[in-house]
Amino acid sequence: AIEVSRRTLEESLRSIGHSLTDIRSFLVTHVHRDHYTQAVALRSETGAKVVLGAGERPALEAINDQIAGSVSPFPALLARAGAHDLATQWAAQREAPTLSNWAHPDSWLEGAQRIDVGERALDAVPTPGHTQGHYVFADRTAGLLFAGDHVLPTITPSIGFEGSVPSEPLGDFLSSLARVRALPDLRLLPAHGPVGMSSHERVDELIAHHEDRLALCLDALGTGERTAYELAGDLTWTRHEHHLAELDAFNAGLATMETRIHLLLLIAREQVSVSEVDGQDVYRLLAPG
Image 1 (cartoon, one colour):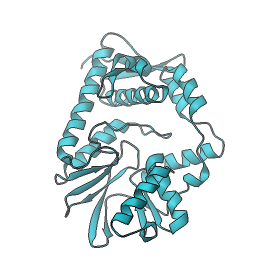
Image 2 (cartoon, rainbow, N blue to C red):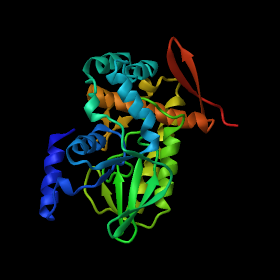
Image 3 (cartoon, helix red, strand yellow):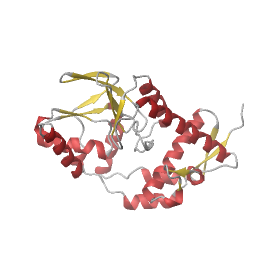
Image 4 (cartoon, helix red, strand yellow):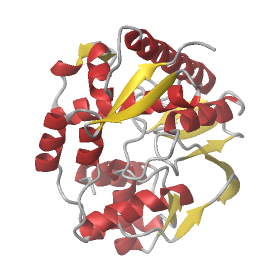
């Protein structure tokens, strides 16, 4: 768990006349460390229930397998993508998770649900993409969207950063964005960044961003076949448009895996093919028609 998040939560609760012991349940948007582990830590102190999307079960089990001694899947994924130096660095740098932070939730959310929270009602909306079991929570009456990492105001959520990756995580993410776009236009309450943006406006921007990235991938493949790592080197990253070589090992690894995720969607759209060459996936453009 992250200590500063606990302090901030305690201070915020105190400002409205409450404390940690008043919490009865945590509705966790997804299983990443900066979201899930604080709820698990506080459960042991307060008895509050922890609720998580059922789609997170494979990722949580993969984490617990690592705790039991299995190897992290990410170095192998990076090596398969052609990023051998990054794979070595990730294997050396990533800390092993600890069991106390990654216990299972008390209950799993499945499908769309309506959850009563005091005098309010929240619509729990499944939004796979950033992770398989991600959820957002919409308070239609108050016009609020608790968006987790699905819709972020100033950055694009990472896609596919989990040990058990579905076949088309970017396709899932785009479908989930469309699902949120079908809700009323709500005030965005993201897990990272400033609050208050129009949910519709930001969803439209994110969809356009990924279509632009897909087009850039196709343009780069038009000059010859590439591994995901090589293709990531042809693109720029973050809103500051850094080159891959300017990123640290962690973010360069994320960029490589996200490039692979875009390529998987292009394969599904029958615009790109993939073949294995010396243990690496090599992608090439398919001729139209």
